[in-house]
Image 1 (cartoon, one colour):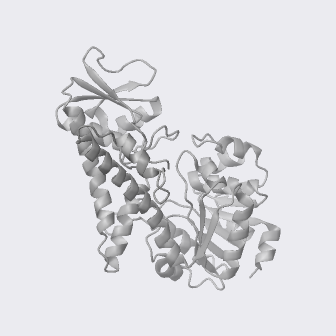
Image 2 (cartoon, rainbow, N blue to C red):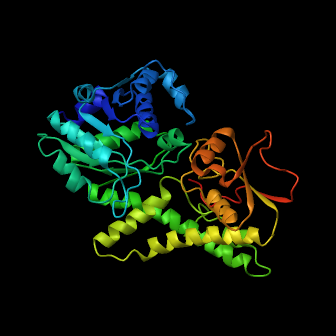
Image 3 (cartoon, rainbow, N blue to C red):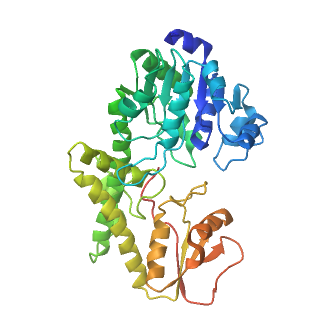
Length: 401
């Protein structure tokens, strides 16, 4: 097996999965001088990376791709394994069903395909979110015939719409190292790819799996708590929730991030990670009281917001900025809380207009059809503007992710 010094001297890395996060990570490493070969399964997509014609809504990606000199995409997993001793896997692990908090089908297939090629002395690094226990059980089992290979867990803490910035300026780098050597490689790698000085946390893969979920769960708990306090203030004559929560955040033990009142949490990560930690806690015999309460209050808060609007008894309601978080530059509406509020208004018999940019409108239409009326922001109205209406965008952001 190549030494850590040798790997860091040659600066070669392989990637499996060049989706939104995979490509951003590969470009970040390339910018730091690493020679990258990455595999993906879509021929047209691979070609668009190689000829630098890729169009991306993720800020900074197109510019980084145009300027890169040491990144090549391929359809061949073998090319990736032949190119480098460190292989990063960034494939989708979407929300699963029941106790399967994450669908690791694609990840497991990649590990099995690697195993069939019988690589020797490679460091395999899983960067996608998994349920605690996956690396030591399923992952290690799938690679057991790969002589001298290690399996590590190195997930990123990023937000859609700010991935490049998040990779350059992380608060924390989490390394669940398969052995000390790959831990050294990853630590020194991130010391060169980050522009700040993040806390680098090295631990076992098992600890890292729990830590990854715990961070997001703490954030969701903070959001739900802030919204609960805000709802209490709204129900108390003379109380102002903004004043209360700004003061609460002024205590250094609390902090101002994720402590303002507003919509609840949504998106592809926060809700499922919160539920996943609860799922794993039950698997090991721990009752996840806080996880359950956080999720339950997030749903209740949408009900309270809808009731507040219904009390106005208007003819029509306009809900704007309906992506999963405020001012999001990418088109993601998964578990969008503005849409959850809008759905409750419709169920109560009200007309609701969704107002947003055209690409978001198209996405909402595909998902919800004629449940809502639609209006392109700063464009021609698709609904009846003559009725009395209440326009509601995102109030003070509940989170800064």
